[in-house]
Length: 242
View 1 (cartoon, rainbow, N blue to C red):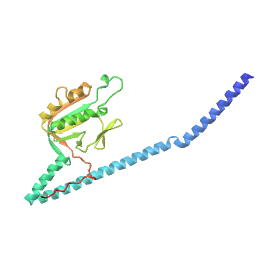
View 2 (tube, rainbow, N blue to C red):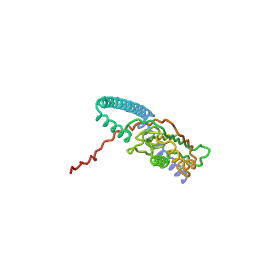
View 3 (tube, rainbow, N blue to C red):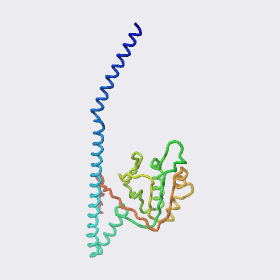
View 4 (spheres, rainbow, N blue to C red):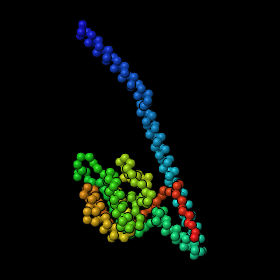
């Protein structure tokens, strides 16, 4: 009798579990749609991403064309007036300081690659995870009077943000990956000496097995900063005349 009751109980439990499993499978099937909806959603997102990229490229092209026209107007006016020429020169200087002009000149290129797989023990690590080391490089270059700096061809300015984005990083909102290539315009000898200082930043990078290439260059091109900065809370102070 006990065996009969046990078998009956096991049979009821098995039947109950089978009903639950069947309901769950039907629910998942209705929700997922045998993989159709996720595939359609992925295709839709891909199209939206492509459209956003095309709009971004078109906007950047329009901005470049507008800036070229403004530059032509400014130069045309400056050619006819010495005072306007001085104003134009000052404007160019402040654009350079703000990072809104493409620049070229002598300097250095520092390339940092992740450690080889054969020297990594346990979890793999990447320079992407060591943002503080990237920021240290920039700090050293600024201290060495670099006139312009870029990270993977993204201009570094006072408004630049560098942050982690999954397995990548974002500079000025643009996603970049390894290797990290930092360029700086300035006195090549001074910049290289600052980076290669004994127990300095290059030594630290190599200590952690990063592959580092540092070279002086006669001519480096650094692109302009492309994000527009709008001042919402700040305004110039009014000068009080005596």
